[in-house]
Amino acid sequence: MGFDVGVVPFNSDGWGPPDAPAAPLLLSKGDGGATQPANIPFAPFSRSEKLGRVADWTRNPNFGANASRAAAGSRDAVFDFALDESALSGAAADDASFRLVDGKPPPRPKFGPRWRFQQRPQLPQRRDEEVEARKREAEKERARRDRLYHLHHRNASSAGGHGFGANRRDSPVLKSSVDIQPEWTMLDQIPFSTFSKLSFSVPDPPEDLLVCGGLEFYDRSFDRINPKNDRRLERFKSRNFFKVTTTDDPVIRRLAADDKATVFATDAILSALMCAPRSVYSWDIVIQRVGNKLFFDKRDGSQLDLLSVNETSQETLPDAKEDINSAYSLAIEATYINQNFSQQVLVRDGNKVTFDEPNPFASEGEEVASVAYRYRRWKLDEDTHLIARCEVHSVTDVKGQRAFMTLNALNEFDPKYSGVDWRQKLETQRGAVLATELKNNANKLAKWTAQALLVGADMMKLGYVSRVHPRDHFNHVILSVIGYKPRDFATQINLNTSNMWGIVKSIVDLCMKLNEGKYVLVKDPVKPQVRIYEVPADAFENEYVEEPLPEDEQVQPPAEEEATASAMDAAAEAEANAAAGVAEGEKDSSAAV
Image 1 (tube, one colour):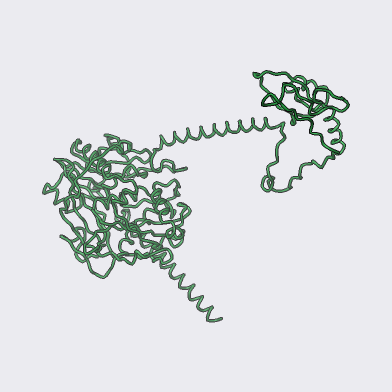
Image 2: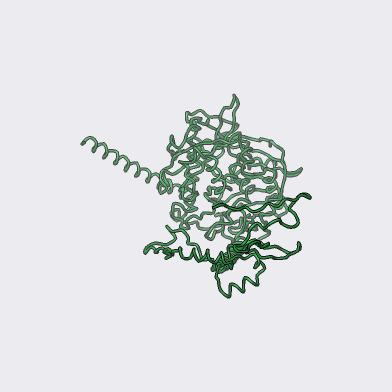
């Protein structure tokens, strides 16, 4: 059986097909020479009309009156071959050979959610519009919930402050560092937003007036410590650490009597002012205006004497004060760790570098920590000079020259709060660990950097100290010690020295306009702002009490620290005894075997 391709017309007059075909390409059976192709309808059209499909193979083949009417009324009815006799005969043959398979849905599991191990079934085509409508409604509901959440979040932020720590989830109600008395008069309140616009440059370097104390050399072997080769943190109970305020410093009193400056402070107080926009917890500074002089002091047992932990973190700490992971307990623990770390990383061979005068706060024969005090003077304007007592902790030799060094320690109490395990990440991802600490302790690291810049240190050492066990807050290990140059580290954490001094200059100018008396600068516990109160002259002092309380009823910060130290020592001895007992038991069992 051959296949007739038909007659190919030839145009002898030019290009293209002739005006009339010579013979039809396809002829219907029995036509005997019909001139029209078989089963192809003729549809006249113009070039402006829009053509449809050549053939509709996707329409629903319901051969009935309704289908005929729908086909007749459609635009593409002339190209519809569904009603062709040949198509009908072919469809009938296909229907005769068609056999329906099992179309039942698969059985659902009796237990567990059905979406766990099954793919999402395809929805019937007729329900697509319903599904799309449901999706649109779900998106609208989700957008509405998100809008309400962000609105509530903005209201909470405006009421509770912004900046570092403003998004602390379920944060507890923070308390003020000092009880505001009814007789105090609020003079002014300064929002932190105004601090970010301030800028002031001071002559660098400042003038060194006097250096007191003695320094021990840094032990370079601690630079090689890593988490696999850690060292146990020791305790230095015999060495005394001094946290003396400005007006109790005999050297500052002497310099004030000689009219060496008009503003006096310490590096701890200045760093708190310089880094105020990064603070979350409340703190306070006592300001005394005496004549034309200004003294910035701190109260006994002030918040400035303790190191905050996770102050700018979004993870909240337990509220219970007796909890080992509460903010107060962690502050005491961090302060002890910082003091012990600063003495352990030294070469304790008795070799010290002495300066002009001995430690002004130590009595004769008393063992003091390695610390030197640099009394430095900055020029704020033609009539205003500032003298600050700055602390440096160690000294080292770099290429034959002495380099001053500050020593501070970061502490890890529970990896669950930070999300980064130092023992696993310090060697491979040191930058991630530092970035996490900058997020959770931005204020503390900024104050350490500011103190290093004030004292003129050539290097600042940061130690990474972790608990032996997350539930043991008495025993710690040193995992690593890393050194940074203060100016480079300040640039890394976005600490602008001009902005720091701009904040100090604005506070000094504001206080210089006040009358003689005593004032207190308090950071609001909730809002990002500071307030200035005028307080009585005998505020924060015990001299006006006629009959003091008995000694056993007085609660002073040193007594509390001694109690904490004794508790730490007792717990450490108990743990050591328990470990020794376990070791002896293992030896006996091995000997018996």
